[in-house]
Structure formats: structure tokens, C-alpha cells
Length: 188
Image (cartoon, rainbow, N blue to C red; front, side):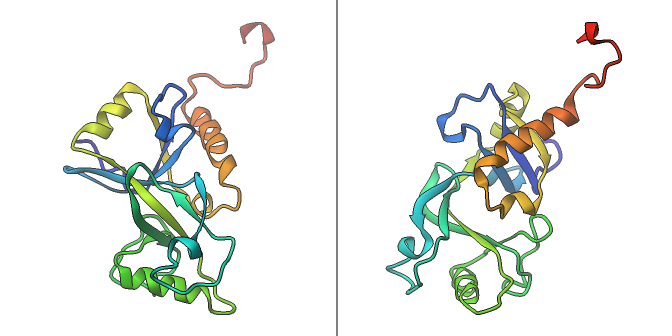
């Protein structure tokens, strides 16, 4: 295994044919010898958080949507948030992005989000993305994914539908072989 990709975005490459990951950006939250786990950050569902949790918590209806985190364990809910005080034992995946580590933390996050003047930002995901040992490395070698440092602004963006376009352009810019500036138009 090469270095850990924890805290990186996987940006689906144009040649990736898996329909689960079409124009996807995955935040890698764990990566080691046993495999990798991540969350697709740019595919909101049509289900609200309040509706998804109606049998467990009495939450007011808001516009907060559950995101499709990936095809693995689609009924399981995962949460990321920006508060280091709600889960002191958890280290950030990237600055301002913490992965909720238990059902109690999940409930604390949702309860805190109801407080007036809170500065808490969170996302709830149904399912996750997972790779067995060596599987992700093989997909990277094949060119299925491009990697770029993760940024919390993309995780919590108000416009998730533009994230893939922005990051694919950014990865192509960082990985181009030649400058896009050219004194001789004939050379393009």
C-alpha cells in the first residue's frame, strides 16, 4: 500500500463506468491495509434528515437532506460535522470535518443544530463507499479516480451539483503536462 489517502478527495475520472460513482467526489475518511472507506459528498437524495430519522428522533422538518454516501450499507446513516467539542475523542478527517463516532454523538449533533445561533454545520449520509485491501489502489492505477486534497468548503457546500465540475477542472489543471498559456496559437 502507498501512503494513506485519508483526508483526500477521490474525483471520478471520465473513464469510470460504475453508475454508483458517475460524476462523484468521495471524501476518504479511512484508508489502511484493510481497505478504504469514504462518503460521496455531492449526491443529495430527496429524503430529508427529519424524515429519515422520524422513528428515532423527533426533529422539526427542515431542508437538510440525506446524501447518498455510497452503495455500501445504504440503510446505515453516517454524519460529518464541524464541531470538535461534540466528539472530543475523534480526530478531524480534515480541518473542520469530523466523522461522528457513535449514535450518541449523532444525536448530540442533531440536537445542537436545533439551538438558536448555533455555528454547527453537518451532513448526513445514507450508506458509504468501501474498498477491500488493494482494491482502491487498483482503481487508481487504472485511472478510475483522480486525487486531490480535501477541503471542507466542498463538503459543506450549498451547491453540491457543481462540486465534481469544479474539482475535475482543478485536478486537470494540477496534472496537465503543458501550460495552457501559449505564445504561438499554432502549437495548440
